[in-house]
Structures are given as C-alpha cells and as structure tokens.
Image (tube, rainbow, N blue to C red; front, side, top):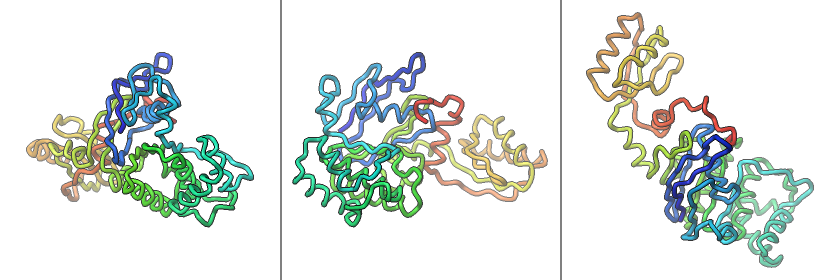
Length: 314
C-alpha cells in the first residue's frame, strides 16, 4: 500500500528525515513511534502531501506522488493531532462542508454521514454543535470526516493525545474495527503499550532514520540477544547506575526511585557488576528477570534524543 524510497527532508541546513525506506502492506495497522524530534511528523506530512520532500519518492496504492498528487490525495484520509475550531457549526454541517470539498452530493453526503456517525458511535450528535463535543468525540468525528471519500489509507497523528482512558479505549476499538474492514492505517503515537495492543507492525524512528521496522514479534525479537534484569535497591541507587556504565556488556534501560532495569548480554558480567556495586555500599534487596517490552526496546534503540529535537515535530 505505502512505499517510501530514500525519502529525505531538509529545513535549510537541518536534515529532519535522512533517507528512509519503508513499506506498509495493505490492511496493516502500523504504529509509527519515535521521541520528540525524530522526524515522524515531518514524514507523515510528506506522505499526506502537506510537505514536499527534498528528495526520494512516496508511492501509495501503486501510484507515485510525482505528477499525481491529486490522485494520491484522494486515497488518503488524514486525522491531525489538532482538531481546529468550528464556531456554531453543527456536526451535520461539518460533514457537509468536507463532503463538498470532495465533490460529494448533498444526498450522498446524508447517506454517508448517517453510516459514518454510526460507525464512530456519534449518531445521536448529528444536530449538536461541534464545539460542544468532548475531545474524544471530536477525534472520532474527525475520523468519520476522514472516511467520507472512502480512502485506501487512513493516517492519524497522535489520535489519543489528550484523551481520557475511556476515550482512548473507544478510539482503539474504532481503529481495530476499521482494520477489520480492510483499511490500511498508520498511527503516530507516544503511547507504546497502546500500540503493542492493537498494531500488527511498527516502525521506530530516531534522528530522522528508521532504526527498526516490522511486525511486533520481530521487533521484540531484536532485543532477545540480551536479557533484562530488574534490580531492587535500598540504598545508593545513583552509584549503581554509574557503575553500570563501566560494563560494556550492560546497558541501563531505566532508573526509578529504588529500582534499576538493565539489559545484559553476559551472565558473568552481570555477576561481576552485582559484586562491584555491593562492595561500593549499594544495598541490593532483590532482582528478577525483566521480559522484553516495546518500551524497553524503544529506550535501547532511541537513547537520549531530547538535545537533538527537531522543532518541526513539536
């Protein structure tokens, strides 16, 4: 469905996207993740035709963007992270306005609106003002609007941002329903646990590059050459964290108030590390195996990216 080939984007001298290649098959629910500034919003805007790539190409449903932008855009439904302001506009009028942009007749729009509002569980809001809806309802209405022209590809930029837990569940159920209907869906999100529950494939982006892409299972398997250990510490956790950096075989995944999570590739190195921190007045109260998760692998692959944040992605 979607192919990105050697995609590059510069903002003056800053390279936001650094030659990425990506394939999202038809019918996939694909999660696009990365720290702030990784370049994912820039990439999404190029896919949607809102930004022109510096070089490279984008293919959607077998059609290149070059010379075919109008044709490609008709195959895309886009749900941005910010809904916008629609003063004194009813839900029905909101749908009619966007239908007119796609050349959809008033009669056809009424039929489509009825079905789409039922799909997103907003049938009873037809004559309500858009501004009176909750954020979760607005997000679902935006999905309904994006589906008016029956696009092949639906792209959502942070669809769960700012939603309460109930609204997140409703959004997840909606997207899984759309996937079951055969839609190809791309979601940009920071909520990794949510993506792992509903996506069948993900791409992790860092410093403008795709550092990992594939099915959830294959992505998680990338980290299995290491084993994760949770170490409970009662005293001097800062010392334990610093000592971990002295071992080539050990990577520090996270530091909490009284707990370290490390990834280690060698049991002997782990034993030497534990002996060393205990001889440096670190009180170890227990440790256990840490199963691989999308969150821990994300931390391994992206590291500290905040200092290099791409301002275009904020």
